[in-house]
Image (cartoon, rainbow, N blue to C red; front, top):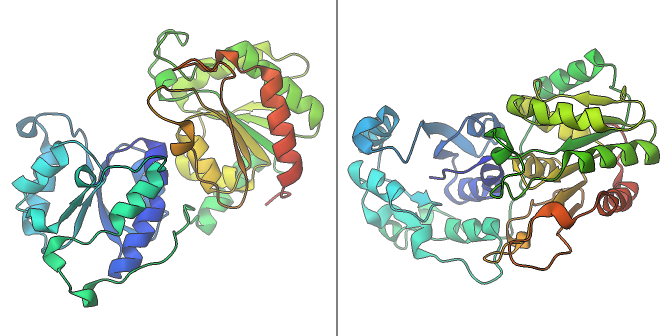
Length: 348
């Protein structure tokens, strides 16, 4: 059971792979969010999905919770892993007749100092429910950590190629830019104080111009959800020089196409958001801007790279909860140039 944002679900992939190795069959996943299905359909270690429309709604007012409980009541007894620290998942399991002897929960396994959230999840996945006791024939120990990469199909890659050919950019080095996050998608004033990952539109425009100067044959693709189209439009309007090599794709990037695009891209520049995690998983070299938080370290929530490096940029302002404002466009351009120059893989 894991109810996470897009990045959280990407970080769960190694855990699902480990559990499959331990028990010899794919996991059934209880989750939520429209991003979960297209990601997990590309993870063979993930089997049937049970998606809640809301986990915070009162139980008696939410049909998806009733359906989950009914499924649990008819499910054969077996291990259950809860990657949440609140009470709601446990209450749903109790309603479904799942005894605590079958449950391994994050509530009983606090994070260690300096432990990445993905490492914490893997440590929980190595726990054994009390009900299994010493029955080693039902499980096996797994050494090492499975990787985080989803598995794309040939159809996923063909779709991406056709989309790039339609826009006549299939042969260019693709530099992806992800300026928005879930707070941007909610609308309202982007500069509001709680939108800690906001970075000014003029800064993004300067970065795009810098990328085009350093890599003239590149195609810059502005990524995001449809609700982020106004942000992309404003950024492109501020780009100095020709804009014909800047493509806004916010209305045209379902998750499978995004994953395939990240797999073949030259590089990505992003704020801390779900697509930053998927880019790292797909082997796309990237620079990610992270805010400082007094209560947690960015390194413990950073994207996990597979075959290409990830550079985390923190604000030079050392104050607790410092936002992105003190990161300059020149900082970003320099970090991107250094990273991308050493890791460009050529077109996929």
